[in-house]
Image (cartoon, rainbow, N blue to C red; front, side, top):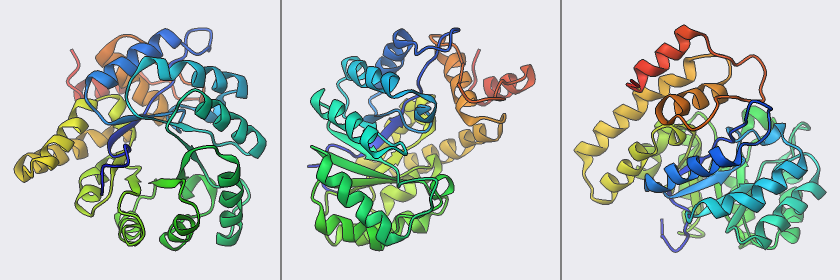
Length: 297
């Protein structure tokens, strides 16, 4: 893809740290964003799934929008998804007013939507969003799918629609969007939502990955981009295998958000591994598995 679009490569859906009072810990957030920035990844998604947007009030989300962009100079995307469209527009207005480059929106979830309903929904959002926007396609959570046919229809009609995060555990689904979108706009960004599809998506012409392990080992994902740019396929193979090995983290515990936060805490020591999701606390044995997986001392 063309790099005239700043959104490519390894983008981290950043965790949102909470303190012992279950409030947003902006000091830990600043440290986390600094660590991500120093790792040389390519961008950050603010308040994605791992960022626990569904557990936050609108006021909390507005406060994150107000502060997060001060913590990094990386390209940022703000997830504004919710079931209340007026709130989505309010969040998007705040993001664009603060200087963010793009927002991201899930399909209108809970009620499974037909392709025609999704088109009308995104048509409306396009008319309200003041800047560029991404679709967050996550059929396992929304009950509907944004496929290549709908993507190309939206691309043709709405120039501010600049990319998609395709969180579908099927590489061919993402590949079909990549190939279809490139016929319309080479600079359109198609991200995989799964860590282990980073390299396959790059090979297929996609923009890269937007995935959780970037919180824990962002330097690994930055190294993938460096090897890809240098056409160092031996190194790319080695790094891909390492991402595959570390993806075993998702089999530890009941709540992958808590598990990712525990891994960050074990490596970085600047946050409390608290999630607002229920039932995710890890046992001592599970924490030891994480320490072994990431070679934490």
